Amino acid sequence: VVQTSAEASINVIKSATVSDVNANSLTDAGDIITYTIVVSNTGGVPVEQLSLNDSLKDGNDAALTLDSGPTFVSATTSSTSSTLVIGGVASFTAVYTIGLEASYTGSIKNQVVATAKIQGTNTDVTDTSDDPNTAAANDQTIVTIDPFSTIEVTKTASVTDEGDGYIGKGDVINYTITVKNNGNV
Image 1: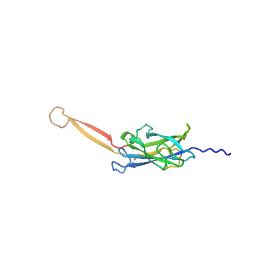
Image 2 (image 1 turned 60 degrees about the vertical axis):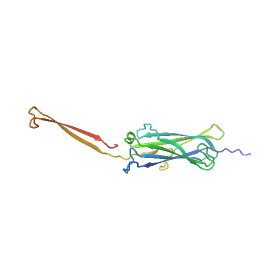
Image 3 (image 1 turned 90 degrees about the vertical axis):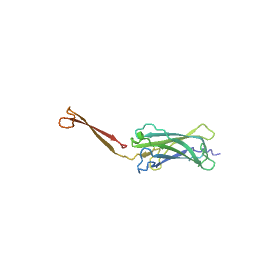
Image 4 (image 1 turned 180 degrees about the vertical axis):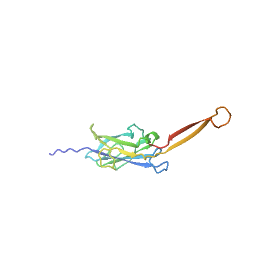
């Protein structure tokens, strides 16, 4: 008798696509990021009770909230949103609209941790998502916000008449200059 044991493992890939909602050819506030999450059973045993813990942060590591998701999209034959047969794959999406404050931080960072149980046991198997566009393991999927620098300057004047009823010599002009940052940097 030869005893065998199958290894349990899952693999999570997370990619991002940006929709340029405001049609300015920049990735900035108001644009929508759609994340695609693909979880694969890469081990030799089925897994069940699959759950996703999604972490979304701005460039300063402040927590953000997804608009929706992760939402189940599809699975390969005999797999579901929560059960993956050997070689099974489940796909999910999540959506985030870039907020103005978040856009000032220069990036949006997202990562998901998938956890499942080896079928018929209480033993967990986990994996942290990888960005398929980099060689690093377990790295965040980062969307870089395009720097957009612009300022608006407004200057107004008010005159204080020194008593003769006319604007002229000796009157005081007070200038107010307002500078507003209309960019995201």
